Length: 309
Ligand code: CP
Ligand code: NVA
Image (cartoon, rainbow, N blue to C red; front, side):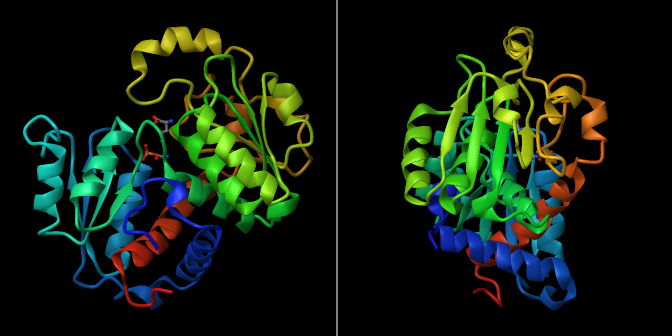
């Protein structure tokens, strides 16, 4: 296991599977792990808002017998009051791990370089690894077999999409991404992941037409059209993403038992309709719950708790 979890690329396929196995045990028997991170402290350094990531990490830490300290945008004033590297070096003297939610991905890389304790990326503009791990854990938990699953992502080729591409490629899950021109996922990442997928007998394919991508899908996934930090582009993006909504018409093309997923928060009526988000295919709240179980496994692996495997 590397020191940090900055991107899914920091994990091998076997490490991902072992995180999933431990998450399953933690979910089934939480009280069996109530002292696993006893005496350990996690700093939650957030420059953007959060519901799921903040609460699931903080509660997860508490359930493992450790402690979480939330440091919001106004507390440390990362990069304004103090340089990233100095914050990393100082916090390393106090805590056993740091979850960082930030804007530029380089900020996570800099913190990791200067921190002697693990840095876990809690979302950057390039990746959201903890989200993608919980998402694919949920797909498997719902009984889908990795090599028989077609995972379709409709919308912005953003941080969440990038991380999902890596997990799918590493685990041999077929992935299709339907994004409008100019909003495709990172080109280099797609080409690396496609090669990896090919070596596993699967594929990562880009589509322009969401309806073609959704045909026969086992999973349909979407995320907001304008991510945190892109609010000024909302109007422009609404135009660009017209036709990329996950709605009843699109879902009708997927398999009859297809799962609908969304990392949340959702902009209801934009990238997804109420009918679909609240409908019988939707597993979004199981997905949200699994953030906690999977992150508890991540914490045990990276912070070195008892029961680490
Ligand atoms: N999905 C997710 O990361 O949610 P929050 O932004 O609420 O943490
Ligand atoms: N792509 C979204 C995900 C939020 C969890 C964002 O970065 O705002």
